[in-house]
Image (cartoon, rainbow over all chains, first blue to last red; front, side, top):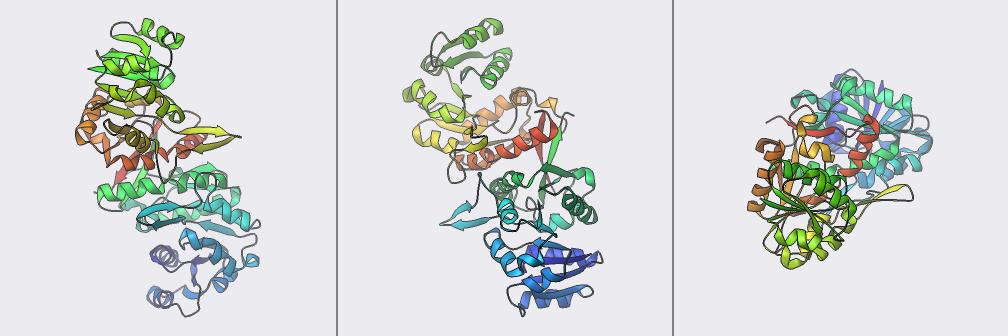
Length: 217
Length: 217
């Protein structure tokens, strides 16, 4: 498969690296053509890995991962170009968080979500929200954390969710550990997990944890 | 121990019933002295169970459980009387939720929480947030759900959290399954779990589930 990973931070480089390692073609997209982090990533990753602008990455890709900070996700997708997203799976792994005066802020929150905003802004893209509830190392190596812990998927397009579920399977998340919460509206729920994630990070002292939904039946 | 349980809905009656069954004295508090649900509960529960006003319940209690809807929690505690809360453990199990035009609303959310509001309104009470992340049946019978799933506690007073942890132990939550997230500020995180709880309820088709925090170490 041909993937675009928008964002050259730790999340983008980790996801892009895993996809390249799995044999996919990956373009790591950034605002500028000569982003040093993206060029270094492409050189270090080797076969299948390239760096480019958001638009270059998206135009050649079948699946587009949004791995920038949630606050700049829409701007990155605008730069990628709506035409380059049409009909494609857009996997949003972002969290719309920022610290303001030492306080965590989520925007949007509760009555809207970044996943929904992306779907509204690009109605011809097939937006799926997933993976935003775990650290990037756990995203691509779930066995770092013991147990049958899960990731969630939300999205209005069933085929797009299936395609993401296959990708998650390659990462090490078997289908029974991919919990489908329904439409993209449920991005609200999984984005609102971020404050708990941060409290657990502070309490446990590390990021290698995840939640397992336990149920009576 | 002498408990007050404020609220005669399913949560209040279930918590009160369990506490009475464990041999504690429980007064189920409501706005009025002659609340039919409270009187029926007291008659059915038998030994140790009484019904009364919020103030009657709180005045005689050592520990006060807030089991009304989050939106009316402050009003119930006002009616209970600040002097009846002074120095006492006030365990807030509420969720500040309401459906408005078919949409779930949480208020407060993100930059504040009901747990914090209660602590600010009653600075001499020792407020602990817990149990709001599970269904009332699971609260008092955690073995309904398999696995080492957990409940959270948040609060500024360590002794109060210990006292709540002992009560949770009597319910069936051993100490290693009571996750202390720190101060009452973390009530934000656990209250923001509600939308995910509702999505899981809808997805699984029942309320007998809970989250287990899995960790590498």
